[in-house]
Length: 256
Image (cartoon, rainbow, N blue to C red; front, side):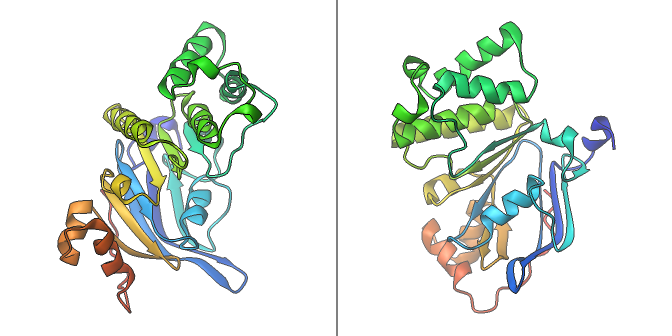
């Protein structure tokens, strides 16, 4: 399928996705889609299936059953991969390289070069507030600073689809807000973001949320609608309402 044709589809579509590892079912009959320019949050405790779901969307695994399409393609697909940014929960940086060298390395993987590359590296370093530490080896940076370098690496090639796995762990509250303001600007440019987070204030800034527990999708909707359905004003209590229902229904497809 051509890149032009792929724009006719939502950037992310999952239909009846189940993933098993031997006797363990990590995901069970998961169905939802994500619209262009939307920030979609994945919320759930450790072991709920968030990371497995992201890996399937990145083409790093295949579902046991069901279908996964990303940017109009079945994954893995090289054309789609070039348009994806990914910030992992665990650092994928080279500790002996500087912050700038790490960003340049990841940019080169996506084919960036020349004057535009240098300007873009400066831009993302400024975004994550590391211009003054650009030449510092990553091994000399704090954990929060390394998170910021990882985000810069995921953004340097201007992806159409961005995956963020706990992007603000170890980052101070002021910079967290700055990141989320930037994510909103990316949405306005048509960039689609899928983010997993444990911060419920961040979850409330997503356009829609998918609530996961034991590999099942409990609910998919806007934060306000999830509050309304649960009868809870506090978002944490709203999540607990869905998480503690003894027999959650299988959600209907949501192609928004």
